[in-house]
Length: 138
Image (cartoon, helix red, strand yellow):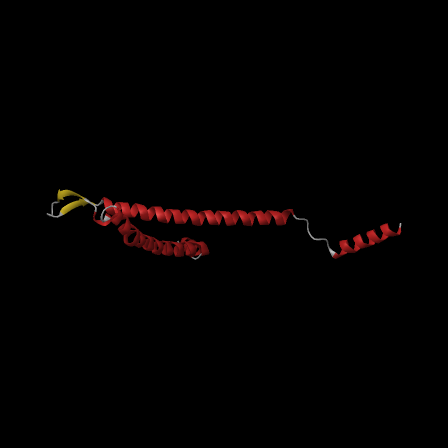
């Protein structure tokens, strides 16, 4: 049992797990910001252009529920959520695309470094000078 706990501690304290947790927290905060942007900034002008429609209020009344309250199919809220998802998905796409581009550039630089011949040593430079001097004498 103690081996299992030890393995879990090693896993939980690795940097990538902490990075993932930070990413989830920031992602949640980003999602909240995007949701507010869609609901509070984008949808009101779109609704106004469409004749004063409020997307958050768009719903189909399905009748009374067992508790006497109206049962609503809130398709306007669904539209808001779809737009929020598309914005977040596009931002993630741009982030991944940028990271892939940077990774490709890094790999290209590493490949170039590997292919480049090493700089000549001092001994090799001295031998070249001696060779050139001998060639001039003959």
